[in-house]
Image (cartoon, rainbow, N blue to C red):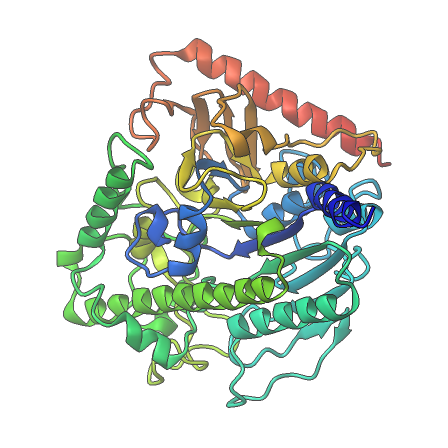
Length: 520
């Protein structure tokens, strides 16, 4: 009998471990380009995220909504933003911030996870209606002040306003987000170690303003001295070598600049700023110096974020939880072509990247960061709406370093977690997304439709076919299996396919209209 006791205990432990719910960590970057990570072909040094990729999965056809607040609403609810009032389309109203609050049936992920015994933690950007604790998170550090990486005036803990951060205090937003994540995970380890956790880590980097620590900028050295034309070609070669995207590199569109024009802001930034992706050899010496420094800061912000993610991962390891933690990483939209001045303004005499400056990436470098795709954040072309997506879960994903061509979207994350955790769907209004669990195990290509609309930039993907139009333009048609970079418009050759997909696009709008009508 004594000999049987250890055996029985071992079996019981094995069964418990087998059915133990995984921890979940969702890491969201802000305005990160498709090829900004090393594991997606970029020259930016991201060893921590690269390691997750090489020990997990990289998705090559994963999408967001092309803008920050619609993506965040979709990611945490499982619905298209237009279904829940987080974005508009035609006559259907919606928007960011506190405008057009979600309907009562559109709960956020932590609300559901409570039923499965989870504790949920939020750190970083929010940009969703309501407040994190009200929405179901157990702890939250909300960094609301987007314009000040060094001295935010508005930030909250557990929905309560904190004092403004003083200049020169040593505060840096990206580090603070990691600090708070680690703090909450340590608290979880001490008080709730038997419960699974979900951590939603929403970094503000590398969103404008381009603010980075001087030591991080210095580490980037002269990596960008050859300019954006050569760096874009360099990334394209790396992308092809890695087998991420093949075909033709999209052409730079010389007349596509920032989606919103602020001429007075451009004057503040001075003659070194350029709001079009001009050939590098046409820039003045002053412009080249300014543009090189901007990209150095962008890279420094991402490299710092990667390092801070490494600290979070180390805490998960310290908890003995790494083996059964699903970590996903993605961006809320493509890199941004925006140029503006907000916050504390821009002092041209201050070191670029410091608190007194307000540089934005702009279209020249945004084209590089979104290599090999067209357009930028706000547009629903691939450059605006496609994101790197990593999935790492040692216990649940046996593949190591594999890529997935399976099409996914941020609306899929909540249904995936429902599937993973064994939650029963009780809402009555089906999620817009679908579970990704099958693709964790093999690269299954499922026929599905993905829909977009933002600022009258519209798109729909059905299988390998995609229609897309920018505001005021006609539909373009692309076969993404042959032309992933949207270089050859087939609309004139296949008008019947355009009509078919446009009808599908409108059918989705009608579904939104009926759904929103039921709220009244």
